[in-house]
Amino acid sequence: MPGRFGPTDFAACGRCGSGQVHPKLLVMGPIAGVDSDSRSYVCHTCGREGLPIFFDTESARAQFEREKKGIWEPEPASAKKGPVSIPILPIQTDPLIDIKLLDLVPARVARVTGVRWDAGALTPTGYRVSFQEYWDVIGGPRYNASRVYMLDLAGINRANPNFDVTRHLGKRCDVWLDSGGREPEEVMDGYMLDVERVVAGSKTLASLDSFAVLYALSSEVLPCLDWDGHVVWREPKEGQVDLPDVVRALRGMGFTAVCVMDLRRLGSELGPDPALLSMLEGLDLDVYLGGGLQESDVLRLSERGFAGGLVDPFTPVIRDLLKTPRPEAPTEAIAPAPAPRSTATPRTVPDSTGPL
Image (cartoon, rainbow, N blue to C red; front, side, top):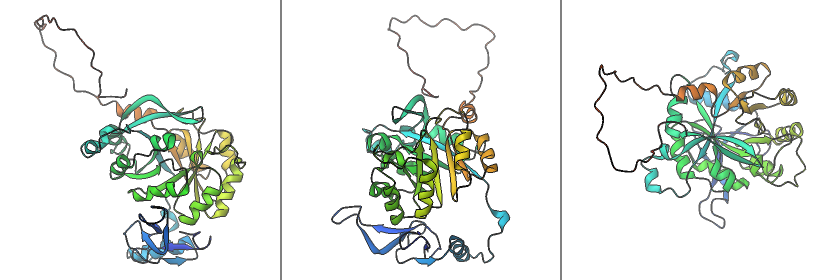
């Protein structure tokens, strides 16, 4: 949690050493869910409440966490992980869903849909499957995704995030969640859910100043700069639209990681824009790139110093795994007898076993 007292403060939980320490938000008060008690902090890893311990560097904090786990030797350089490949999951839900139904079939109610950037909005495509079917594929041993980047389309497009559904889905995997918060306090609402990281997208924030406010609340918020040739903000009057300049400004605030979403290529599977890659190389923070990426693109990103890639929802690999083979029925040696003629009017029943 650097940034609460300055860019050189790295907070750790006194019990477990985790850096997931945030000011405790009050659910009652003059402005419910917004006001915080500056003397009270909560660890989102172990649940401890109290004052954190501060370190001068992130590596010192990480060593303290390892010691809390009984690991006394510093982490060897060879143990550093390679680039991560994170599937983007645009989630579409019906805002009128009965909450009682969610307790029974939340993973079937939520749909993972294709998505494109069109007329200034994330527009779902006709290709979609149930979350249950999608997660069975990418969470299974053949794809083995460790986390997902979830776009709550109801929150992003209508400022109406479906936290009831997201809470259920977050129990199944590690989630980086963009719920479409318009104000920093709305972004922080994501920490009420069991997610790994809360994402703040520039497309729903008013200006660069919003990120400064977010960093003061929690350095663990992950900025995402939505880009279609310039940085996209909710307020068109925001003049900070040059991508490298905005990334450097975020680094100056203290952020150590950022996502960049190429909206022009999102859902296209065309791979990363070479000009965009050149624009982002050499920046002093971890950059996760998304928009048009397939799994093979992530490996090439590592060669250029990127931390990882946000993979399009339906790459050829994922679509192929979604095609669940059906068992073949034995063929009869003789033709079956004709069925009795019916006088009822036939109707077509859509097949719900695969993508629409």
